[in-house]
Every structure is written in structure tokens, then in C-alpha cells.
Amino acid sequence: DGTIWRPKNTAEKLEKHLQFTGRSVYTRFPPEPNGYLHIGHAKAMFVSFGLAKERGGYCYLRYDDTNPEAEKQEYIDHIQEIVDWMGWKPFKVTYSSDYFQELYDLAIQLIKKGYAYVDHQTPEEIKSYRESKTDSPWRNRPIAESLKLFEEMRKGMIDEGKATLRMKQDMKSENPNMYDLIAYRIKFTPHPHAGDKWCIYPSYDYTHCIVDSLENITHSLCTLEFEIRRPSYYWLLEALDLYHPHVWEYSRLSITNTVLSKRKLNRLVREKWVDGWDDPRLMTLAGLRRRGYTPDAINAFVRDVGITRSDGSLIRLEKIEHYIREDLNKKSRRVMVVLKPLKVVIKNMEENVVMNLRAKFWPDAADSEESSHYEVPFSRVVYIESSDFRLKDSKDYYGLAPGKTVMLRYAFPIKCVDIIYAEDKSTVLELHAEYDPAKSTKPKGVIHWVSEPSHGILPLKVEVRMFEKLFLSENPSELEDWLADLNPNSKIVIAEALAVPVLKHSCHGDSYQFERLDLSTMLVSQICFGFGWDAQKSYFCVDQDSSADKLVFNRTVSLRDSYVK
Ligand code: ATP
Ligand code: MG
Ligand code: MG
Image (cartoon, rainbow, N blue to C red; front, top):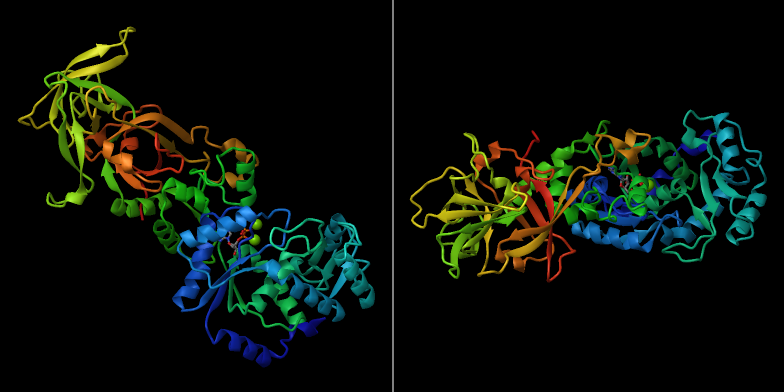
């Protein structure tokens, strides 16, 4: 039936539409509240909110909530909060379910026009009939019969699975998305937003285009997998004589060594492979936030990835790391934290002397800028990184060794004069050293450290969590057993790292670079439980698990940048 393809009342529809939009751009970001948003949604938001913003237009945040089993209030609340965090301001927040009555009324019109029918085929029958391009036996039943049955569906008089409303599209088409798509199904499930008012729910294909039209969307932007559904989108709006928005598709974003489909994310969370939707190893926006990523870095990343229709949008994880480094380099203060402490007793210092030295939050800080500095106590007992000490010295090694001198950053040179072993005679318990108060020696190696704030008092203890790639393969989604590809060492917890006292006043969300600026030490890559020097040259943020007794830091990203733009 070709008639419905000819646009009808175009001028009249356009006029009505323009009265509403006044020629402005209207877009929508339409997440289904069946999970938390991820980095792919950051791209989708950039496209729709971004276009509206650029053109002085309006973007709706619309919950595309037509599957009550999968959807939850928790997700609805989270989405609104994270959209705000990303810096986007919706013109209005709407729900597809707010239109259930209009959608139902339009379905009755559709039946009356002969463009929909109540069907009784099982999912298997529908599938095999579609494969052979065969009409359902109910396709040509009288309109009155469909109207009566649809009414009974709504009233809950027909069991789940026993009837659907199907659009009478084109069973002979080359496009399987025209094979009488389902418009309504029966589900005796209450809805998180609409409550228990309905027991029939409209499908995505029926709902999306109608709500786009009812909201006078000018540009309906979605990912490429919907392209094949475009004929159905236009078909339904034509059949109902509704204005139709311009639909445009772009490629989906994928990232290496992670999964983004909400079905897979749901499984990781539900089966506790990760610690919730905001696990810092996930590429959910909540996970990235907890990991220390900023909206600025995420938006800069999606902008530079670009909005195209080309496939192969599998972007390297290193690329997004590059953007957060650039951002944090500007925003994060430098401090000293020792991850795996080795005690050093400075023998030529008195027990109860504490010097307050000046250290820099910012590497380029001028001496006169008070707020760019912090105080760090220096006393007889100092802790250095275990990996900064070796029993055997060598030419390209700039750390501490027996008889050797290194510079304690912002403090003094120290020389290792003795080694105290544990009873096993091989474990180094502590070092004895002498410092050079006149700073007459100029050692090449500079190391970070913390010290007892007063005699016998341990420096501030903090917990540090380090994260690695969640999956070992670049494209785990391609694997049959993708869960088997999880990296068993994706999270390492250091329960007792030691920090400079100034960190005590940190708040949830603060970010720091744990500094290690001496480039010469980077030549040495020594491994202490799975991480090397990188660990000391990274950005960290304060985690929400922090308490008054113990701060918890998450490693956002290491300093080394292997990404080439
Ligand atoms: P999933 O398969 O993960 O459930 P979805 O497309 O069903 O994804 P929705 O919440 O319905 O997720 O998506 C809301 C919007 O975000 C849609 O317009 C969708 O096209 C877009 N979107 C989802 N994932 C990506 C992605 N990886 N890259 C770009 N846009 C995406
Ligand atoms: Mg969707
Ligand atoms: Mg989905």
C-alpha cells in the first residue's frame, strides 16, 4: 500500500511545528533507564545537547521508558544527576511514559485507519513468518475485531503473551524492520514512573518516533544501528499524519579493553565481578567520576573523537587517558605519598627536633606565592619508597644504596651508612643514614619521602587503590566467553601508604599528583608488587570511602603518556 508514503498535509504540519519551535533547533537525549550511563552516552549527549547549545536551541532529557521489567527509579535518579555533572542543562525532563495515554489514543486511530491489527502469533511464529515474508493469519481481520481486542488487552482481560498489536507495514519489503513491527505487548508489570496504571506497553519502535514528533524535535540523532529502523519511523508518522523530525545517525563509540553494552555492564554488576555501577574500573560515567575523571576531560575526548558515520569507532583506552592527564596536570596539586614505606633513621639528627620545610603544590610556583606551598615536617625518622633502595648500586641507578647519597625532595641530601636486617638476615628492616644540613653535596637522584611529624608518631596513613585494564583483550565483546577475559589483577589495594600531613584536610573528589619529578629515576623500572615507578608518578583522587580516620585514594591515571595524537 504505497499511498501512505506520499507526505500528506506537509505545509500544515510544518506550520504547526514551526509555531512551536520558532525555527529553533530541538533535540533530545533519550536514555532508557535500565542502567547507568557510560562513556558512549557522553558522546550521545555531546551530539544532542551540544548541537542544541551550538545553535541556541533546546535539548530534552527524555527517559525512553517502555520496558518496565528492566527499568528502575535508581537509574532514573542517577541519569539526571550524571547529566547535570557532565554540564548539560536539559530544556525539559520528560518520560515516554508521560505520553502513554496519547500513544494509546493514537494506536486506536492507527487501527481505525487499517494500519494496525491485534495478532496472536507466538514469538517463534512471528520470526518464521517474517523469514518467509508471510502474512500473519490475523493480519486482515476486521478493524472492529482488532479494536475490541485491543480494548480487552488494555483492560487486562487477555493473558501475557496471548496478543500483541502489530503495525501493518510491508511484509514484502527488503527491510526486515518493515515486517509488521510490534506496537504493543501485554505485561502485568508495574512501571517505575507510570505506576500500575497500564498492563499494555508500547514498543520502542512505536513510541520513539511519535514522542519525537509530539515534542516537535527537529533533529532526531541516534546511533547507526537504528538506521535500518528509519523507514518504520517515517512510516508510522505518515500513517498517523504527524510531523516528522529529521533523523540522522552517527557511529557508536567503543573503547578497547572494556565493555559498554548495558546488558554486559548489568551482568558485571549483578554478579559482582566489579564493585557496583560506579566501580572505578568501569567506563560508566559514575565509574569515571569515581576514578577522578573530570567532565572537561570526558567532553574534550568525545569532541576530538568526532561525530561521523564511519565504523571502526573502537578507540584506544590510552586516548581517553591522554585527555585526563592534560586536564589534571593543570588542576592537581603535587604532594608526597610513599606507597611501600622503608624506614630510614637519620643518625646525626636529634630525636625531638622537627623542622618545618616548605614544599610546592605547583612545580612552577614562585617563592612569594604562599598558597602554592605547603609545610612538611622533617625529623629523625623518614620513610622512603622501598623501591628507591637497592643493596647493589649501579651506574644508571639514582636511588639509595649502601654508602650512596640521594636528595630528599625539598629537604636535604642523605647518605646510607648502615642496613638493619630482620632475623632472616635478608629482609631489610630499616636503614641508617646521615644528612647533610649544609647541602654541600649535590646528588643526581631526588626521591620523595615523608617523615614523623613528631617523635614516635607515624606519618598519616592512607589507603591507595590502583586500577588496571578491566579486560585483557582489546575487544572483549567479540569473545564468546567475555567474562573469562577479565583481568584478575585489575585492582590492587595498598592498605598502608604514608602521606604528608597536609593531605589530612582533603575532601572527597580532590585530586593530586603524587610527585616524583626527577626524570633520571624514570630510567629505572623496578617492580614492587606488580607496579613500578609509574605508581609514584600518577594522579590520584580522594574516594568516597574515605573517613575521618582513613583517607582512601584512587589512582586516576599514571603520568606516562604513550598516546600519540
Ligand atoms: P545499550 O546497548 O548499552 O543498552 P542503548 O543504545 O540501548 O545502549 P540507551 O540508553 O537507549 O542505550 O541510549 C541513549 C542514547 O545514547 C541513544 O541515542 C543511543 O544511540 C546513545 N548511545 C548508547 N550507546 C552509545 C555509544 N556507545 N556511543 C554513542 N552513543 C550511544
Ligand atoms: Mg535504547
Ligand atoms: Mg539498550
